[in-house]
Image (tube, rainbow over all chains, first blue to last red; front, side, top):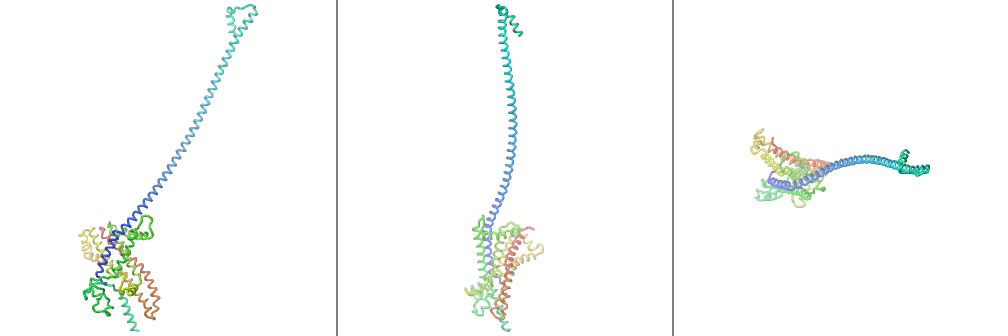
Length: 156
Length: 293
C-alpha cells in the first residue's frame, strides 16, 4: 500500500494510451464499421428496390399481356364481322349482278322477239302481198294497198 | 519439531513478503542518491549504506509496475493499431473480426450506458478495459515465474508482473476518471452548480466525501480483487512448494495442484469481470456527471 511517484508514471502512461485510442484506434475502426454498415444498408435498400421493380415489371407485363389479349380478341371479332360484311356485300353484289344479267337477258330476249316479230310481219306482209297477188293475178299496187296491208299486219 | 515449524513460518512469511515487494527505483534519503532499493531481508546481509524500500519517500518508482503496464499497453494498443491500419470495409480477416467484436462490445456498452455527446468516453472505456484486462491476465502467470527468471538471468530479485496489485496503477486510472467526471460535471452544471452539488445538496459535505470515496473505491475494488487473487495464488504456491521442502508434507502436492488449477479457472472470471466492472462504472459515472437531474 505504498503510494509513490509510480502513480504519476501510470497517470501519464494512461493519458497517452487514452489519447492514442482517442486519436487513432477508436475512430478508424468506427469509420470502417460505419462504412460497412452503410454499404450493407445500401445493399439491402437496393435489394428491396429491385424487388419492388420486379413486382412492378411483373404487373406491367401482366397488364401488357391482358391488353394484347383483349386487342387480339377485338381484332378477331372485327375480322369476323368484316368477313361477314364482305360476304354479305359479295352476296348482294352477286344478287344484283344476277338480277342485272337476268334483266339484260330478258330485255335481249324481248328485243329479239320483237325483232323476230317485226321481221316475221314484214315477211308475212310480203308473203301476203305475194299470196294475194297470186290469187288476184294481178299486181297489187303496193302503195295503193299499203294501208290495208299495214292494217292487216297490225292485226296479226 | 517446534523449531522446524518456526523455521517454516519464517520462511513462509519471507516468501509472502518477497512476493509483495516491487522492484523500486527512487531517491534514497539515507544515501542522498537515486538507486534501486533493497528489501529488509537483504539488508542484513549487505552494507549499512544500502537503501531500504522504507527509506525511500514519495519519489520512488516501481519499475516492474511501470515496465509491465507500459509493455502490455504497447502490446495491446499496438495490436489494435496494427489491425486497424490494415482494416478493410469489405470482408474482414479473422483478426479484424476479433478487433471489431471488441470494438462493438465496448461501443454498445458505452452507447447503452452513456447518453451524452462527448467523444472521449468510448476511447476511455476502451483503453481502460483493455489495459486493465491485459494487466489482470498477468495474474494467471505462475507466481514464481518472474522471480525465477529474474534471479536466474538479470539478478533482479523482485519483480511483480501484476500492475493491478500495485495500488498506484489502479489509482492513476481512477484519478483520470475523477478528473473527467469533474470536468463533465462543471461542463453540465457550471462551476457553481457542481460545487453546490458537492457541498450542499442534499446531504451537505457528505456529498463531497461520497464523491471522493466513489473514485477511491473504483481503484480499490480493482486493486483489492486482484491483490487478493494474487495472494491466494501465493498461498497455494506455498502449499505446493512444501513438496520440495520436506517429505512429511508431500501429501500437499496433489491438493496444491488441484487448488491452483481451480483457483486459476475461477480467477479468469475475476480477471475479466473486474476489467468490465471498471469500464462500466467509468461509463456510469461519466453519464451521471453529464446528465442534468
